[in-house]
Length: 149
Image (cartoon, rainbow, N blue to C red; front, side, top):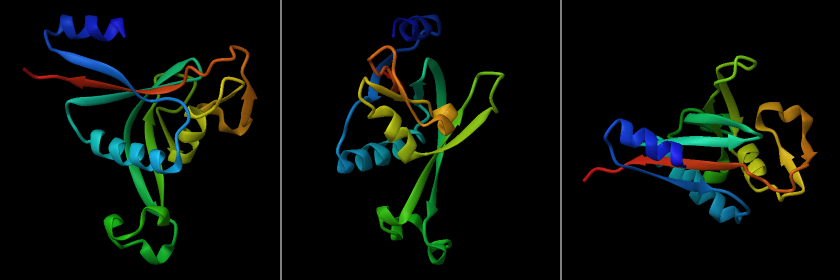
């Protein structure tokens, strides 16, 4: 993440970059990562990059949608985790795609937990799981954080 260090130096700020999520995780771990993501995306000192299928995307938010219509006007905190569906809003920089993708958290999990043999392209989900020629899954969610003294 040398480029992030150079960007921080240019703007005379201190910052850290780290892999937020990559690789397999238990269901409980996925829930924890999602809860942390929903907390961290609101922090003005933090930003995310989603590296997927040889491209960088920028997660910019999320939406919690009840699976049952009777919970539509109930606070999300009063509905159990499993009774909701979680969507992530992702900014796109390519001219070939719309400026914003809205994808299910489960699909991001599917992408980030693929072993090296397969890859899942979040931008072209209709293709499904694809054989990975590189044999390594480079996909990851990266957190960038401004660190104040």
